[in-house]
Every structure is written in structure tokens, then in C-alpha cells.
Amino acid sequence: MVLLDALAHWVQARRAAGEIVAQPLAIHVHHGLSEHADAWATVCAREAKLRGFAFVLKHVTVPRNAKQGIEGAARAARYEALAEGCEAYGATWLLTAHHANDQAETVLLQMLRGAGLPGVAAMSAHGALPVVGRSARTVRLLRPLLDVSREAMRAYAKARSLAWVEDPSNDDRQHLRNALRHDVMPAIAAHVPAYRETLARFARHAAQAQSLLDQLAQLDFERAAVVAAGEPNEAGRAALQRSAVQALDAGRLANLLRYWVAREGLAMPPQARLDEWVRQIRDAQPDASLTLPHGDAVLRLYRDVLQWTPVYDYARADGVEDDVVLHWTGQREWRLPQWQGSVVFAPAPAGEACGASIDEAALRAKPLVARARVGGERWREHAAGHSRSLKHWFQHRGVAAWLRHVPVVWQGDEIVFVPRLGIDGVAQEKAGGGARWTMTWRDEA
Image (spheres, rainbow, N blue to C red):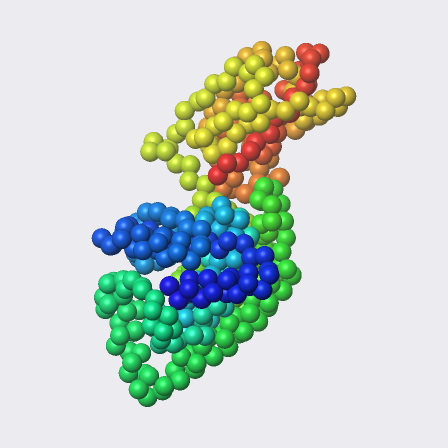
């Protein structure tokens, strides 16, 4: 209410001075967690419209059994809704009313939870929205009251005769933040009246230190960055050469891994897990392979290259995929969800030699059958070349082990196409005199 009222006066003063100021937007997030939530939404709508604000009510669903707890889940849902509201309205700045007491509580709370520098650096006066997606890049977060105490805001509200709503859950001491607010902070204030300023200064120092660590990690990342051979990495997702990062001491490697995890948009790993990653990466032999699961991703080491990949969880209950049959009549895509991918058909460029393409008549001649590998299948790069096992070709082309769970496309008893290898040499040579088509594999993991 203080932020709403102050912003309304700011807009009014600038319009009186002849400036053109767009209509501000107030967004209220209805979490559905309180029996009073509907009444709060009514109050917010009324107060926003009285001051000439546009108003948007966003309903969210907060899972009560989320890993990060109900408070963390509510925060994530809230910021997602705020970002969507800003984007829909075309707003480029989101203002929130976090204040100096919030900042002090956050610093102390993060210290008690054992958070590292990013945690105790707490909130910045301005920065990016804590959400993933386009909104996070187009909307900036501003906390204009971060240096103002709760007491000063309450005095302003009383002087302006503002009405506000008190959330009863703020008095529930079962939540650690509330216990700090009601029991710990008053005791600290009795001995250190300037504790808010002291903790805010500590947060700024932590933020500066973290910025330096991020700069160091970025330098280490750029020195070690490579493109993983044979791996269809997503655009912008680099891999790291293990032998390059192995020379870093344990603390510097941990700093690099934390930076990389954040860059990938993944949750920060617990310290014990991070320590284990550092140990395994530093102790790994030159020809070692590693598989380090983390949430919905896996950190893998293969042929001296560290890279993040999807989980690639293909397994069925019986461990066997059924054959899939396609009678090809010109389809551009053949989806094979049990292998988390698709075979893509495209016309070969006009005038191109046989190369890695197949005659249209050959494609139409017999049904195409996608079948799981069973072992012993052989493939040849050229019709005149030697046929060798798929294992040989995958190793020869540097296709990592976790990328080899692919279907083999047959016609009768002859292999036509193997994902990550291409069209079989014999199939390429089959003449028909018609248009030619390429076949490629598209990952959808």
C-alpha cells in the first residue's frame, strides 16, 4: 500500500509537470492459501483503481508438497505470474515493496541455512526477475524501498491515513522468517540498533565478492569451453574439456561448477554433491567416463569432455520397445516417442550425387520398420565399403554411449537408416530414377 500510494503521487507530480506517463499497472497474485484471499483481492482492486492504476488479478496454484516448501513454491509461482502480467501489459519494470527489514531478515535467514555468497548477498535494488523464459529478459525488477525500514513505512502509512491488510500467517512462528522477525530481531536491535545497516553492508560486500568469483568462473569457463564431438548440443550450450579444468584446485573447480550449473538454469546442488563432483572429475583417468545425475539433467564425462545432457530415460517396464511400421508416402516426419526422437525426411538438393540420400522409389517399395537394437547389426558408409558393427561405427564417430539407444530402420532384412550414422551405403545406391530424399534424426529428449 505504501508503494502503491507513493507511486501514484510520483505519477501525478510528473503529469502535473507536463510529462507523458503511461498508466501504471498493479498486479495482485491470488495464491489460494488463505481463507481471506478473495477479500484481499477485492481490497487490492479497489485501492489500485482509486489511484488510477490498471489492475490485474492472477490466480496461481501452489503445490503443498513441493520440495522447496510451500513458501518457496508460492514465491516461484508468484514471480511467474508477475512476469506473465508484465509481459501481457507491456511493462518493462516490476516494482516490489521489499524494505530494509526484509533485507536484514533475508541475510540472517540465509546465513542460518548455510547459504553461500549468492544467498547472503540477499536482494539487490534492481536486477533480473527470478524466472526462466522470455519475460525474465524483457522485464527488470526494481526494489525502490530496500533502504527504507518497516518502521518508516508504517509511519508514512499512518501519516497518509492508508488502510492495509495484515496477513495472519506473518505471525506464525513456525516459519523461521517470522520467528526471526518477532523473537530474534528485537533482541539484536536492543544491543545493535543499526543492525539493518550493518547486515545490508555485509550483503553488499557478499554481492561484490560473488561478482568477482563469477568473473573468475567465466574466465575458467571460456578457457575450457569446447564443442563435444559427435554430440548434438543445443545452441549456446558449451561443453568443457576435462583435462583443462582438472588442473584447477578444488575450490576453483567448485566455483566453476556452481557457475556452470547456474548458467544452465539448474538448481544449485547441495555442498556434499558438489564436493563429490569435484572429487570424481579431478580423480578421473584420461579414458574415464562419468555419469553424475542432477535433477532433470546429467553431467557426463566422455572422451575428456564434460557436458550436460537430458536424462535420456528410455526404459520401459519390460525393457523392450515394440517395432513401429511406416508405409512412406511422402511424410516429412516420423515421430518415434519411445526413442524420444523423430526421423525427418527432406528432399535432397537438386543435382546432388547419391551421397547421403535415398531414391524415392526405394523408400516407397517396402514398409519402413523402426526396431530396437538387439546387437550384431551391421552398417556400411558406402556401398563398396566394408560393413561393420554399429558399435564400431558409434565408437569411430565419437557417439557417446548414452546416445546409442536409437531405433534401426529396416526394409525387410536390410538396414536403411541408423540415427547418428545415416543412410546405409547399399540403400543409397538403389536406383529408381526419381527424386532423392535425405533422412536425419532429430532428438526430442
